Image (cartoon, rainbow over all chains, first blue to last red; front, top):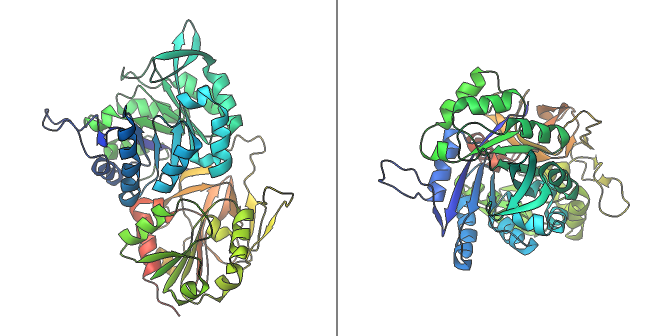
Length: 251
Length: 204
């Protein structure tokens, strides 16, 4: 049976991991490849690297980093952050990325999804959607949450799928950073209405949050960053906990 | 030296990196001489069956691959090209593609039929009924990484099966020819073990 996926996410700025493994402040940042290797050894099923560099120079460094990741890491990985053209996608594919994720650029230019999917296959393009619940209405936000659009979450997800997205990565801004659990209700709704995999992001605080997500079949994978980076949850222990509770997980 | 068959653009960097991590040496090539003098050959998975088969023919490699006498491994589409035919056509009106026929198995498309089955089959899934030196040190139930919408049917050359709405051949073996529907280069340590087993095979 197909297993549920545990996906650590690493934010990378100018070639360094921004949220490092903070052992009492001894180490503020980590090398993205070393951290990825460690997660892969602990049992991560996939990795996501997000480029949060603000400069072109930083973006150039990121492509070099992608090659270094592909050289050393033996599990699939997605890269994202600021991708706005098929040319950028092509450079990342050649550098060894298994998938790319697009967010703001896809909202501004939905045809980008189709262009990339037609050239490199749907399996290569993940559409990341950030949304915030305002007055009972899930509105899509872009540019790292700074811009609230008129798009509605479920309509946009359905459209992204029809344009060629191979996977949806949904982050609830309301849940992100709260450590109070994933937006299970919305994720379940996305999973049921779409025929492509849905990855949950935002809200993971403890092992039970992952269990609830998977036991109720709300998503195909779960992404988290801080709980893994700061060692609050060990991937190995999380996976045995999920297996012991009947979730189909790779060991 | 392992020859990795070059039949068009695509991401083969992960594969060459994995071969090197497993202690092998490899060269990306479309030269018949280099392919026929290599110690082993890998056909990577690039694109869709129709265009991929055309790319092989354009390079005359459809005539070369059957002549290979050293261990040969087709990965993903690379394995499907070794089958008899595929339901995956090309962008023109061809509804199916005739392949190399080294394995008699046909390649079919997953069908959701309103069952909610997610296509492509993407992620980690288990192998059952494994039987081949390719899997030395690997047990039934091991997880490998898959990304595909088409699959080879089961048949007498099936050396591993996987279940996704139905049982299909996740690996095939016939003499020196092998194929895996999953990506060993993306399947963690267990995938590297399989690649090492392949690279250590001796020609008959």
